Structure formats: structure tokens, C-alpha cells
Length: 102
Image 1 (tube, rainbow, N blue to C red):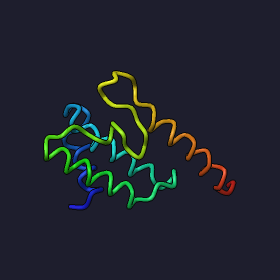
Image 2 (tube, rainbow, N blue to C red):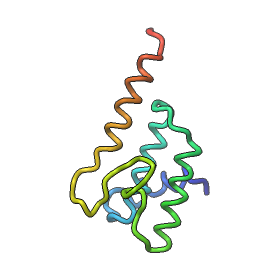
Image 3 (cartoon, rainbow, N blue to C red):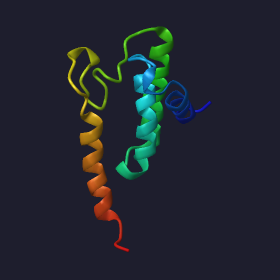
């Protein structure tokens, strides 16, 4: 199973009802979907997915929502995580500018 298939399985089977420990894998599936438009390297998303799978199996707290390369807030701070929306919004705008007009 590839990291992308794992994230897709997590989103399809576990979904957002799985609890906070599975939320990073579910969220990563959306990041895979958006990577083409945002310019994120799939290798980097693969690394994040593998790291989160290892953390989940070990029963350790998620590093994806902590001090990750995405600089998101931790779940324990009780504030909404806006990293994905802000990160992707800027990249979407850049991608839209690069696309030729129809």
C-alpha cells in the first residue's frame, strides 16, 4: 500500500469520525488531492503520511498537528487549525495566475 492509498483509505473508511489520532491521515488525503494545484511535492506529502502512520501505530501524539513542516497549531491549544486553508489559498492563487485563459 502506498502512502497515498493509506491516506485515501483513512478518509474513506475512518473519515472524520475516527477521532483526533486518525485526523492527520484523513487530512493528508485532501492534501494529496490539492498538491497538484498548490505545487506541493508528492514526495514531501508521502513523508508526512509515513511519519503519521508510524506515530499512529506507536500510539504517540501526532506530530502533524504539532511542530510539523506546515507550522500548524497543536490540537491541545483548542484553536482552529488554519494552516491548510491559508497555505492552499496562496498556492491556489499562484496556480490560477499561471494557467492560460480559455
